[in-house]
Structure formats: C-alpha cells, structure tokens
Amino acid sequence: MKKIILVAIFVMFSSYCKADQLQIITKEQAIKAVELIKKQEIVVVWCSCCESGTTGAEPQIIAVRNVYYKIADLSSSAEENYIVVVQGVNLHYKIAFDDEIDLAYTHIGINDVAYTVAQTLRIPFRKCNDGNVWSDLSAIYIQDKN
Image 1 (spheres, one colour):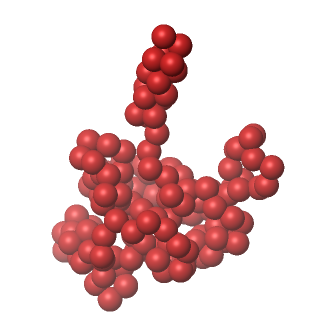
Image 2: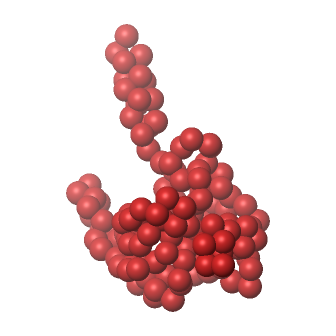
C-alpha cells in the first residue's frame, strides 16, 4: 500500500514538471547565452517535442527588452548553477513576458532558419526537430511589423 501511495504522489508531482534540458546551466553558458540573446530583436520560446496543452508546446514570440542571468536557487546543489531570464513582450498575446528560459527551447533566426540558443552556442542537448523555418515561427511578429 505504501508503494502505491508513493507512486501516486510521484505521478501527481511529475505532471507539474516541464521538460527542462538546459534551464539550469553553468555561469560560462549563461554569460554566452545573455550575450547572444541581447543581440536579438525577438526570440521564439517553444518546445517542439512537448505534447499539445503542456507548458512550452505553443510557440511564444517574444520581443526582447532585457536579458540577464542569475544564480539558480538550488539548495540541494553543492556547485553554483545559473539561469537566464528574458524580459519582453509576448507579441501574440500582447502581454509582458518575464521568465526563465531553457536554452534548448529558445530559438533565434539565422538566415531564415530557427536555431536554438543551445545549438548556436554548441551546447549538447536532445534535439526535438531539424530546424524550422524562422519566418514560420516568427510569423506573428513579421505580420505585426507589416
């Protein structure tokens, strides 16, 4: 009976977790990510392999206003870990965006191809797709500019 209760608690808790690959990173990775994202007018935050209806499954086109890194609050970790925070505007919903990002699911456009920040910085990760057309991902932003 105890095992059933423990499994039930684990299943309930795990449904609230999202698939974070590169949200918790080293200071060097955080510095490089901030430098890269600061050069972008927009980023697309999207987990293309996440199931519909889960966090990150819908592309969010973000007009970047500010980006910074900070120490991750992981009391169980002996080493310092960092997170990157992007502040801006979600262009689809016209609402403020102020959230920690995952480098594996945050895309930038290079020559009309969407690359993740992790790909661009050559940080290994589990890839969800083979490169989306940037104009398809950022279509909301492009339509709003015209």
